[in-house]
Amino acid sequence: MMKSYIKAISTYFPKNILTNDSISAQFPEWNSEKILQKIGIEQRHIAQKDECASDMAAQAVRNLIEEHHLDKNAIDFLLLCTQTPDHILPTTACIVQDKVGLPTSCAALDINQGCSGYIYGLSVASSLIASGNFSNVVLVTVDTYTKYIHPKDKGNLSIFGDAATATLISTEGSYRIGKPTLGTDGAGAENLIIRNGGTRSPRNENPDDLDNFVDMKGGKIFNFIVKSTPEVVSKNLEINNLEMKDIDLFIFHQANTHILNKVCEDMQIPQEKFVIEMRYYGNTISSTIPIAFLDHLRKYPQKARKRLQFVGFGVGYSWGAICLEEENN
Image (tube, rainbow, N blue to C red; front, side, top):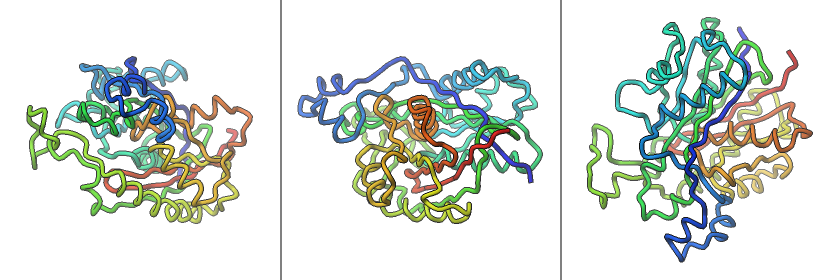
């Protein structure tokens, strides 16, 4: 079976920035410093009104090609993870293929997945490489949740930001991708949902209809994450023949620092091995893990990073974990 590797990662952030001070100006009871202390976020990038998932995704892929000197004609599969597509149809990945100028021999597919999306995407990309039918898969994560947050919802305005990332998964590279552990519990679907916008309940123009916007039951999400995360971590380590002590860096979905600190403490993960890099980006859904990974390696190049574990969890409910091992090819 063909081994699969993460070969390169690039990011894209919209130019608009929403700071805590801006939020405090709108909601005086919502102190700027309090936001930072409570959720660990100082600012977040916001997509412009006419900037959609395909625009951001295309720029992330262009950045990947340019920064890592890739031949775009060698890309044979484009996998795009988003919950905020440009249209109900066509597939956003098809639009991005054309915008970037990838060859028409390149397959293009959307995955509708949220905060566990990077793990799901790596799992699918790794399987495509392992099949022997594809050599260079680009996994894009992109979301514009901020377009679906009610203007008076100060909690979600403080948490979420917009971003896109592009990861090249190939037959060679820096980090070999291990076996994934994935899970689902659709009984939690109602706890993080936008009710209007699909065929069951169409979106409307009523600015007061809260079903047009993100509805997150924070307490239930918190309890789900704290309860489910230790099990998925241990199961994934087990199937990869690893123990907690073998992992140099744990990179969890960057939901908020309150959740992350609780999980870190409960699982007794040494703080120096536990990555928190969301202060300047917020919760960017499926993009948080690659963003935190890149940011941390840039900031701490001397840190051990031979073995990593990525862990995602959230909307669905869905969750996943995957281990990576650095290899010198």
